[in-house]
Image (cartoon, rainbow, N blue to C red; front, top):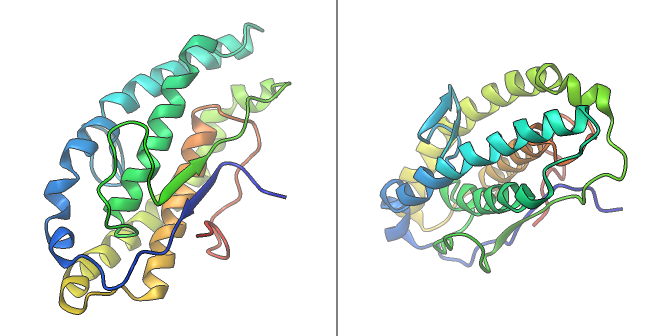
Length: 208
């Protein structure tokens, strides 16, 4: 049974594009301003940064939080903003994490990386919605440590990949799994669903 949200990434063609790897921090900047990413963005705390669209998505999530608790449900006409933000961010994370070499589209578009989100639950668990900020806390702590390790790995990859034209398979999978986990946590925080996400174990966390 497929578990959603699910981050899928196709293995990149070999050899990798060395030139775009070197320029990746600059090439990704316009996307970072709009959707953010680990360590980069225009607003956030520590590792967790969001862009302009991310700020809008989280504002919608706050409105949804009140709506669910007061039996009004999520704001239906604004849900597309959360979907657009998180699916776009998934593509940007894949590009920034050296999982893909293709430049991501702005907004929607075909890409080797994608994020499948769950449909809105028919019944909402008001207790977990009410406690969502508290329930997120252990994930945020664990994700902070993972992103710190990931950032060190990415510095190595940024140097290694242009020299060799390839990224070690174990590091590619580590980057993929950290990105998959961060997206699962954010989807839970954005109130896409009420299923408490599993902690990243790096065993099939995100299948290509």
